[in-house]
Image (cartoon, rainbow, N blue to C red; front, side, top):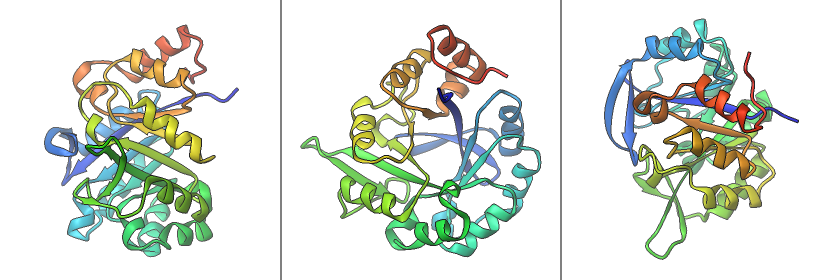
Length: 251
């Protein structure tokens, strides 16, 4: 039986780690390099790092990424501002195992396919940002939730699947930074329409939330606030999951 994964997700703004609520009002958590070093020593299975300014600034901080990969001792996924195959190539050559592609999928639909062709499916993670509208329908967004896609969630997931992405991070915008728990219905919906492994993200506020989503069949979660503001650690969550018969890596 495969072990489930606990993946800290770090949002980078300049040289700081920040935390947002529903994709708004970034609060500084700490220095980016120091924070990554701390998580590198805490039994995280992987790490996701996203520069939230890079897309609009049209500038990727390759020097910072190089610093991260020099001491990060786990698989690292890097996102933010990746608009071309050359962007992805540079990040992978700097030592990241995977690139996270979100907004650029909507402006350059061939990008995922191009990266997969050059580096394989396992090198690409798609970031799916979703919120419910007033009628209770899922709407997909990009550019940090500022722009709404004209495509349905089904069309997007089907296109990403066909393009060959290796994983999908499913982000519930209205749960992000709220500690209200993962969006179980959103997880089930996406899980039912694709065979791509899903990393469920946004809303984790307790170790009980992680147990609930893993019992629903998730094989990976991504979280930030629960580590920064609640006081849980990766180890405390893993020990709790282990006690509840969820297969985790403890060494």
